[in-house]
Length: 96
Image (cartoon, rainbow, N blue to C red; front, side):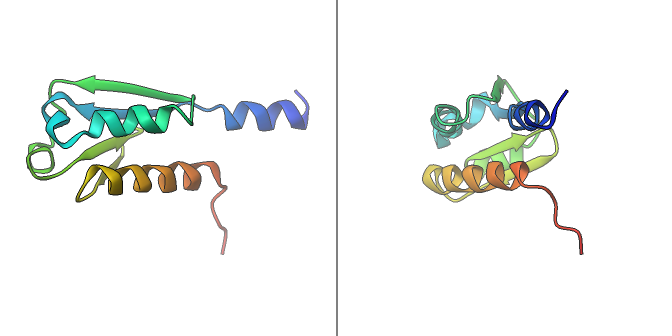
């Protein structure tokens, strides 16, 4: 595999985003669909319950790659946070 193919494979890495069915009132599922329109490598799964009831009840949230819990005060803020997170996932980590 040459360098260009390796870069294309890396950029096409699937990002898993999970939402809770019970969080629909906060429009988290709509936010993920909106982000998915611009980032086709997103695998969105909606579950009945993700076990984050304290988050689900209060505000919109998304679980990214089973390890990053993102929450915001409103759906628009969650959208911006997801875009920022996706950009940071695509960037190599800084070595200091």
